[in-house]
Image 1 (cartoon, helix red, strand yellow):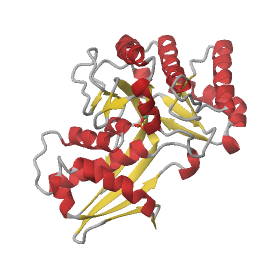
Image 2 (cartoon, rainbow, N blue to C red):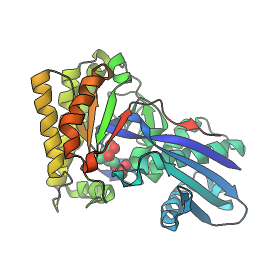
Image 3 (tube, helix red, strand yellow):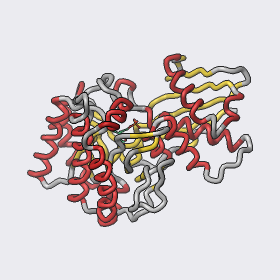
Length: 336
Ligand code: PMV
């Protein structure tokens, strides 16, 4: 039996940074699910025991421990899986050397395959997509948001009814048209391995001097986004999203030990975006994940202007001039 899914990556607007227990978030987050940056994964159940993983058609034993840990974590909910050998074949649609984390898309795709197989084997699941989100979370926290398209919330917060620590929830509030087709051009600044992993970064939040204020701020930001998303208030959106990105990196810079994941070119691009926005009035903005790359966000109605700006003023700061054109996507698809 075999199942195959394509699942996209996502980019957070309000950032998850800090966790406890088994991948439970210290604060709520919300993200845009992307489209072009995705992982295509198939999972085959085999009679003979053991796990094997192929990346881009090449057996990659270094990926086996990650899948084994995932299986160990989900076995409590899905004991049936331990009775089979597992063959995973996976492929990222974005270049391996892009510095784009594949854990969100990869774990989401794998979780969707597991849930699909569980259903086909006759296991009763009241809400298979929600179950996939729980499993994806156990693989990699932010992956739980990639099982749905559009805007997805993870982490219980009073302003979003139905939000949960355990799984991502398709954002239930009103969303203005402008945010349904938003663009994200990813400027690839540093395509190497990150100096400090997200896992280590989450851990540093445990003793962070600003943790209490930060976690409270994330709840406030989620609540503040509600009217912004409903009204399509781009100025307020830009202010909040950029503050979140810089706060994330501010938390890294004020951790013990402190560290910096932005590179000089990250700042050059941020400066260029803010100057261009001020001078042209075009609502182009940025966010950052836990790395040096810059996600350049803008409404699709400004695409031509934004792309001309990226070509002239952003690409010179990118590694080999590389960018990835992405946008808000519809979520995962089954590939069988
Ligand atoms: O899911 P993780 O452990 O890779 O953490 C991701 C954290 C950020 O990307 C920085 C923020 C987020 O909410 O996705």
